[in-house]
Image (cartoon, rainbow, N blue to C red):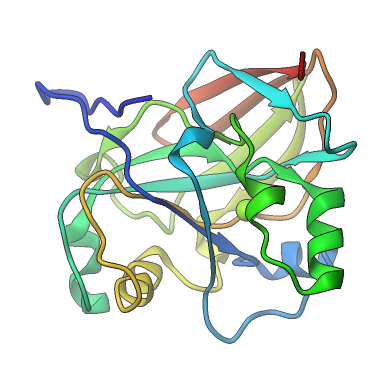
Length: 220
Ligand code: MG
């Protein structure tokens, strides 16, 4: 999958997918996790990406795959040790996305102290809608994010409730990784996560962002 910004001639090849865990207090509570004192980062491979109209494939290795609706930030230019005050200038665009999670495999990994790469990294576990340019979103902390399964709202959150706002996440992540154009940042999910089944239609929306619609299928 490539990323096409409106008004730009060439598509952007996606880079690394940085994801933030437990960035909303009520979601941390529903997962019986403590609110973190610094951003909790994990990575997904770019092979997990799928665009609007695509398919989410439930892997045979899991029996409990959950939806997590998240604001997704596209990094627009290279940066390292980016000050928080300048961080939003590194944003190239925004989209709504889903951090699909094999909750059973994640629980097993948590219990064993193992990484989340398997639980979070399957093909099609990172659906993202079309991106809008950064200046189309006046304030990334003022986006209502919603998620419906077969037309029924399951998650309805507001990015103003993030524990670590987008600018702080970019500043923090850039102390670890060089951020590059095409990198994506999944900013964490509000409460209301839950399982999906084959045949489900998942619809994610965010204020000012193109809607994302994917269908759920069982692995062949
Ligand atoms: Mg998530």
